[in-house]
Length: 110
Image (cartoon, rainbow, N blue to C red; front, side):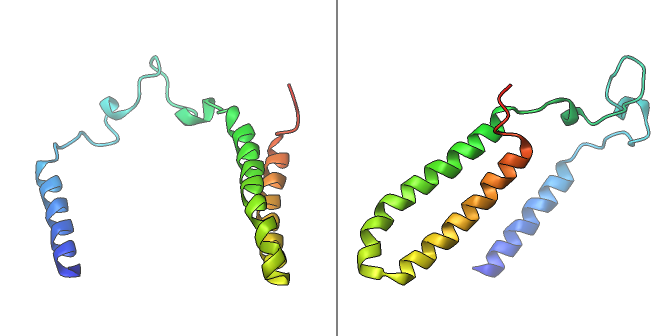
């Protein structure tokens, strides 16, 4: 199965390479993006900032915490210290996400 996968992968790459239309070189003026005659100073994505990202990160962190804590409370009685250690590791990982969000300024309401 591995051999068939490798052969199919190389075949797909060969077909893609054979069907590729040649492009002008990167130094050609046609290859540069249109910016009204000037040269590009910044990358296109640097202008956009997805503001809801940080809030969704915080929501997912707290939502996952609650989704894991409800069943954990039931299992904690039977498992004991092992369940407590697992919850500690889980909360430590979530804390890293929350601290990252804090650093990004989630809690600054503008």
